[in-house]
Image (cartoon, rainbow, N blue to C red):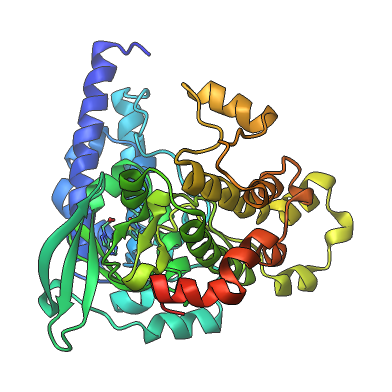
Amino acid sequence: MVHSPKATKSLAVAHDVLDEAIGVVQECMARGGGADISAALSQQINIKLKGDCPTALRAVIDRHSWTGVQFKVSPNLNALLEDLFKARNDSGAKENTPPNKRRRSDEKDKADTGGAKSTPLDTSMRSAKETPEDMALVTEIPWFSLDDIDVGKRLGAGKFGAVYVARERRTGFIFALKVLDKAQLIKHRVEHQLRREIEIQSHCRHVNILRLYSFFHDEKRVYLMLEMAPGGELYGLLQSRGVFSEARSAWYFKQMVEAIQYCHTKHIIHRDIKPENILIGLQDTLKIADFGWAVHAPSSRRETFCGTLDYLPPEMVQSKKYRSHVDIWGLGVLLYEFLVGKPPFEDTDEKGTYRKIKNSTPDFPPQITTEAKDLINRLLNKNPDKRLTLADVLAHPWVALNCGGANAQRLQRHYGGIV
Ligand code: AK4
């Protein structure tokens, strides 16, 4: 879109003002809960704000409320915003499109709930649908800060920050500390995703799921305290070996099936199973990590309670029924990649991969056994209804052959593992 010079200038002002507003909101956050945002804003940037759009300001507040700090928004903020709105119209800067206009529907009223002062601990994981059980879990989690821990060697780095070995000073407990840059999280609009990940992962207790012990944040960063997985990413091991033997694949695959089975009993669907998201713990115990794409499906309790299934259209019934089937497909792709060294529908471009996923059956190199092929084909059934269930997977001849009977002890001896 081409703007007039005047509009471009007011757009630039709006950006500056927004940056400054973010600064104010962040400072309020650093001071702890219950900050009076309207006083701070009018005191510090009232004059400059004249060129800005109030929606953008509301959005800034909304976008920071995910950290759990509750802002006290007194009625005079609304007056201030109305005032600014008028000022903006008067100055003719109508084209000002706030960069942060998109709002998250389930977060939008959070900024108005302020009032009581609360600690970061009990507000930081609060959501509209919180049950007493959830609250009990949240309050059980101890609250840490950087002063409580020693940070050691860097284990890895990504777009949002790095992972370090860390030790809790009081107990000497070793864990992995993932440091995420708040500005990056906000820039890429993934605050919500992170919040969901924290909510889901901190509720999971399974040997094959990486524990999220706790988390905390300061002015600039969010810190995740994670279970240490000394073997690093499974992706790295698969890269260096090319492929895994059928015995090793079966050992790994069974652990992943059990982890996903656990998730599904808790109505959690992972949706992003791949070697990059799997870490290696002690004695070849695999740990699923990164629940950034996971969702919490409605609980059966709620489904029965609502009792409105009779009225649902086919696409809703289907989506409910089939949602968890994506993980079964994901396990099929994973097993193929273990045995063949590349994903089954790989192509030169995304369009090609898309076409293959829809229409092709995977090709198998000659060394893959008939039983393994059979299992993979049953997991990669295009019809979600015809895919194996997780219980069927564990009972499949290939899994039974490789992980059961005499082989069970052999695997246990060879790989160890923590069961
Ligand atoms: C490595 C050993 C969400 C959003 C945006 C434990 C990020 C080791 C490690 C370890 C996340 C995550 C994660 C778990 C793994 C952290 O990665 O190979 C390093 N390494 N080596 N953890 N032991 N790494 S990362 N959960 N979640 O990053 N979420 C996230 Cl919205 C950006």
